[in-house]
Amino acid sequence: MRTSKAENIARAQAVRVTADDLIVDLTDGRSVIVPLAWFPRLLHATAAQRRKWEFIGEGEGIHWPLIDEDLSVAGLLRGTPAPQKTRRAG
Image 1 (spheres, one colour):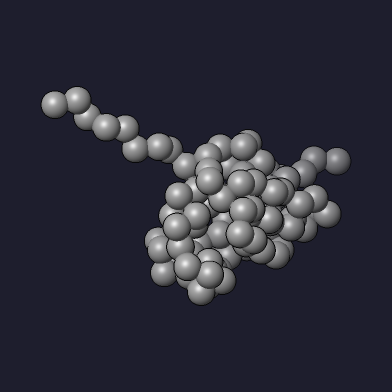
Image 2: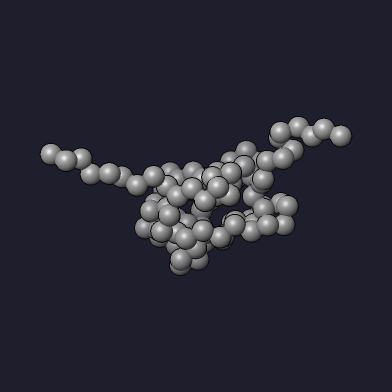
């Protein structure tokens, strides 16, 4: 039996943010826990800003509109932190 690629996409079903971690529960029963330090916008956001999130698509990602942060479930599963800003020499 063949399955389409869309059926194999991990999807979020719940999101929690603690003082130190982002916790995303997936529809397949797994939970992904990553340090907030990986995502400076979330780390420096207020508790109210962190609580205001919405799913992108059908749970393929998470969007925080008050801080303009978007994270994909695929990126969380890969363990990909946000890119760090580099300082320009000059």
